[in-house]
Image (tube, rainbow, N blue to C red; front, side, top):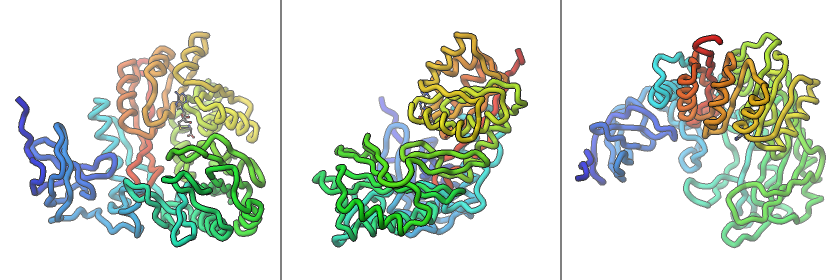
Amino acid sequence: MSKTLPVQKNDYIDVVFEDLTHDGAGVAKVDGYPLFVPNGLPGEKAKIKVIKVNKGYGFGKLIETYEESPYRVKATCPIYKECGGCQLQHLSYEGQLKAKEKQVKDVLERIGKLENVKVHPVLGMKEPWRYRNKAQVPVGEQEGGLIGGFYQQRSHQIINMKECIIQQEKNDEVVQAVIEICSRYGVRAYDEGRHKGDLRHVMTRYGLVTGEVMVVLISRTNDLPHKKKLIEEIISRVPGIKSIVQNVNPKKTNVIFGDETKVLWGEEVIYDFIGDIKFAISARSFYQVNPEQTKVLYEKALEYADLSGEEKVIDAYCGIGTISLFLAKKAKKVFGVEIVPEAIEDAKRNAELNGITNAVFAAGEAEAVIPKWYEKGNSADVLVVDPPRKGCDEALLKTIIEMKPKRVVYVSCNPGTLARDLRILEDGGYKTVEVQPVDMFPQTTHVESVALLTRKIQN
Ligand code: SAH
C-alpha cells in the first residue's frame, strides 16, 4: 500500500522555510516531507500553493509572505527574474555567505557523516559585483539589428541585455561594441530554428591585472561578411584589444564552441596575473572567472599544503597549471595531471613563462596516471586535488589512501561530492582538519571550498 502524502496538489498551506536548495529555492517541510518553493528564504513564514507532488518531495509556489527574512533585499538587477544566471540576488550578501556556510556544514554532516568538522565562515568579496572576467553572450536579432543578451529561462528566446552586473564593466562595453559593429556591417544572427545566419555568440575575456582583451566571434560558417572591416573597427573601438579569434561551430547544437579556432588578428593568447604568476590564456583554455577570489582560494590551498621546500607534491586535475605553479614556488617538485591535452600544453607554457623548472605535467586521467606513478614507486608528500563537480574517482582515492601523503588539500566546487570523498578518505586513515569555503560566485548558489586532511596516525 502506498503511503499517503501529507500534502496534495493544489493545496494552500502555511509554512516556515528552513533552508535553501542548491539552486536557491526555499525548503519547507510538512511532516518531514520537503517542498521546494522558488523565492522562499530561510526563516520566512508564508502561504504557498502546492503545484507538484512526487514520492519523496514536492514543489510549491509562493503566494504570500507573512514574515520576511531580515536578509531579504530587492534584487539589484532589473532582469534578475527573467535571466536566471544569478539565483540569490534577493538575499543580502551577508545572508548569502551565511547560507553557503550552512550548506557546506550541513552537507558534510549529512552526506559525509562528519561531525564537528571546523567549517570557517565563507571568505567573501568586499564588493560582490562586477567580478566575472569572461562573458559568453548569445546573439539574436531585434527590429532588424543584432542584440546580445541571454536566453530567457527555460526558453530559446534571446532577451536584449546591455549590462550584466556580475560582469566586469569592460566585458559589457566590449560585447556592446562588437555587436554594434557587426550589426552595422550586416552580419546576421544565427537562427537556431532554421540553422541559418552568421554569428552565434560573442565571447570576451579581460585580463584584470594586464588590461588585455580577447574577442572571440563564434560563427556558423567560416565566412563573416566584411571580416576585414569588422576587425579594423574592433581594433579601433576596443582599448586593450590584443587578440581577435574566430571559432567556427557549424553544428545544430546548443554547445557554444565548435572544433575550429583561428586567430583573425593579434595574439593567440592574452596574459593575466594571479598574484605574481603570469598566465597565458587562449580562447579555449579553462581559466577561473573570478580572478580576485581565485587568489584567495589558491592562497588558502597553499597555506594548507604547508610547504617547506623539500616536498614532492602532486596536483591532480591541474587545468592550465594554475595551482601547480603556486605550489612549485614553495615545493621541491610538483607533478600536475589533467585530462585535457591542450590544457597540459598551456600548463607547460605557463611554467616556462614564469621560469619555473620544478613543475612537470602529464596529460591523462588522474585516476589512471597517479596509480601508475605510485606502482613505479613514485609518491608524494602532499597531494592536491581540484576535481570537477562529480568529485574524485574512487580509484584515485584508493591510491591516495595507499600512498599516504602527509597532507591532502581538497579544492572542491561541489560540497556534495566533497563530503562523499572526505568520508572515503576518513575511512582510509585521514582526518578532516578544517574546511574553508570561498565565495567565487557571489549572487549565485555556487560555493567553492578547500579542505585540509592529515593522516590520523603519522606513518
Ligand atoms: N585546478 C585548475 C582546474 C580545476 S577544474 C584551476 O584551478 O584552474 C577541474 C579540471 O579537471 C578541469 O581542467 C578538467 O579538464 C579536469 N578533469 C576532469 N576530469 C579529469 C580526470 N578524470 N582526470 C584529470 N583531470 C580531469
